[in-house]
Image 1 (cartoon, one colour):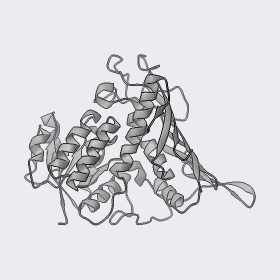
Image 2: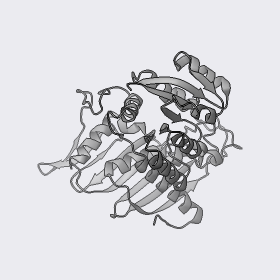
Image 3: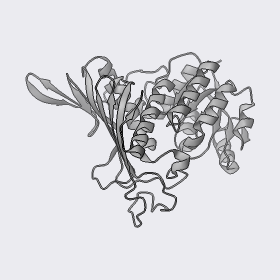
Image 4: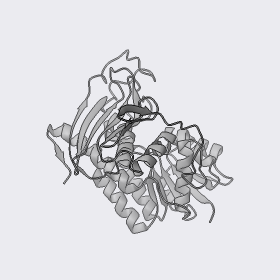
Length: 360
């Protein structure tokens, strides 16, 4: 088998903005099925991306009955990630689930159990790991450049960029706001660079300070104040079992200059690094403080077979099909993604109770 026959469940923004175009550029992909509760969206995606004879569905259960489909993409609101992923794995499909993995850790564990029982590939859409700066930073972290990384910041700050489409601002369907939406990317990057997936406890606080305002100056127009039930910003301190600390900052709307998202800062006992002005490595050379800015445009390294260069979503696409075809390993494991979900849930629970949340 040199092709992966794919079905897409959810044909909205993330499907059209990332997965469908990326898989169209992937020579190992064969897009054969499209499902959406809004049939016109599935029809449009099928017409634009489908192979001849591709099918359209409005019920994902019907799509999963097709034994010729090898892999399924779960690109729906967060509230249905677990249900659809488990059903797909039980139907014998490999699964790419969009981030975040699930609404809570209990759901994530159900997904892991279904993966283990099925023996199929399960990964989560954390494409920021495939950026050139992320790949280089991870390579240096694994080489020991930073030593013991004991402090980190996971940063996902927007000043006024609330997504006003779909169900993003609906807490019930999404599980939260910027913390679970974009904070999840920054936390994933941070844990990955630290290679630390053992949280001890966390303290969290969310805010609903701006979500009832009008004349907002929002990048995508004013939001509906009645529908905006998620937080507009959230913050958490996460203490790991080895004593390391992560400071997580996430917002869709915060009166702060210099917004930046999907970045991490790491500090070790040998050196540190941040992504605040391109990738910068902070160290001491010859007894003097020094900042190194790697030239990430001076050639590329073939980190993944068949994806030596290209956009992060293209590398993500090829990495997934390589894993399905037995030609390579996952770069984002579901076990790692489950810990991200576990920590996000802990921050929300700490905010709810006003107390630290302990993971054991």
